[in-house]
Image 1 (cartoon, rainbow, N blue to C red):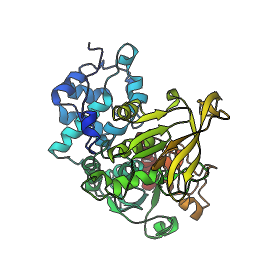
Image 2: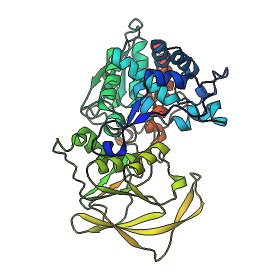
Image 3: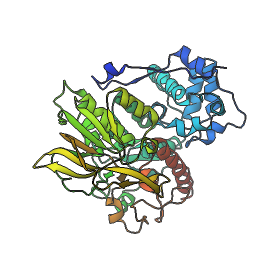
Image 4: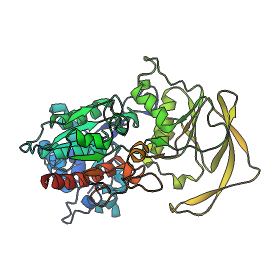
Length: 456
C-alpha cells in the first residue's frame, strides 16, 4: 500500500505566472492506474456519501485500475454530467476524499484527479451521448446555464422532455464561464461539457434576462410546463467604507468577468480591458479571492491579499492558497480595511490590525480591530472578494415566490418553490457555495420536476 497519493504534474511557478495556461497537468494512464490501485474498495462506500451527486466512486476507480477507461467514464456520467469540470474545481478534500478510509492513516485517494483523468480521456476520443427516452411532449424552461441549470437540463432531456436554457450573458456556463480563470478551468473543457448537454437536445438561448426579457408568467404562456431557477449568486457584496467608488476598485465578480469574458486571459497578445498597474490588493480569502489574486499576478502586478482573520480561518482551498504563494502572492492576516484613499483613482488602502475574539455564527473567531493600529497599503488596483448574494430581479418581479431575508429562494428538499411548477436550486437557494453542491441541488430538483411533469 502506497501511503502517499501519486502526485499530479504541474507547471512550474515560473512558467505559469507568465500565462493563463492550466496549472495542473493531469495524470497519465499509468499514473491513474497506479493511484487507483490504492483504493480499498470499501463495501459500504463511505466516499459516495461525501459526493453531492452520488457518483459510484469505487466502481469507476476499479475500472481505471483495470485499464477500462471507457467503463470508468460511463459510471461517472450515470451521476455527473460535467466530470471534466468537477474533476478540476470540486473541493474533494472536504467531500468525497474527506470520507475516504485511506485518510485515517495515509493520504486519501486522489478521487478528483482520477475523475478528471477519465473525463479528459473521454474528451480526447470524442464524448458519446447516451440514449434518450421517447419525447414526452412536455417542455421545460431552465433559467441560468451554470452548474445547476446544466445538470437539470441534461437530466430532463435524457428523459424525453424538451428543454430550453435561458442565459443572461452572451456565453453559456454561468459562474463556470465568468467566475473561474482559464488556468483552473480551460475554456476547451467548459465548452466540451456545454456541448455534451446540447447534444442531448437541449437548446440554449443567450442574452435573455428572465425577469426583464421574459418573466415567469410569460414562460408558462410560451408553453413551458415547468420552470427551474438556477441563476446563482452573482450580486457582489461590498465593504461600505469611504472611497469604495474610486476608480480602480472592482468587485471580485466584475474583475473575473473582465478576465474571462472580455478575454484578458490572452494578455499580453490581447489588448485587455483590465489594467492592474504595479500593485494590486485583494480583500478576502475565499476561492474567488485566490482566483482574483492569481489573475492579477499574471497581468503583471505585485499582489497582496488582505484578510481580517488568521490563516487558519481562510475558506479557500489549501491547494489554491499553496499555488498563490508559489506564484509570489503575499498575505496580510488580521488586517481590516477601513477606507480607500485617492482622488479619482485608488492609491492606497487604510487598514487596522485585528485580534481574534469569540467565535461568531460561522464558527470562526471574530476579528476585533485594535485601536490606534492604522497603517496603509499602496495599491493601483483593489479587488473586493468578500462574497456574493442572489440577484433580486426575479424575486422582485414575482413576490409570490418566497425568499429569505438574505434574498435566497426558499425551497423544500426537492427544490420546489412556493409557486406550483417553479423549482430552484444552487446558489440562488443557498447563497454562494460550490459547483458540485449546485449540481447536487439541480439533480434533486430535476428528479422532482420529472415526476411533476409526468403527472400533468
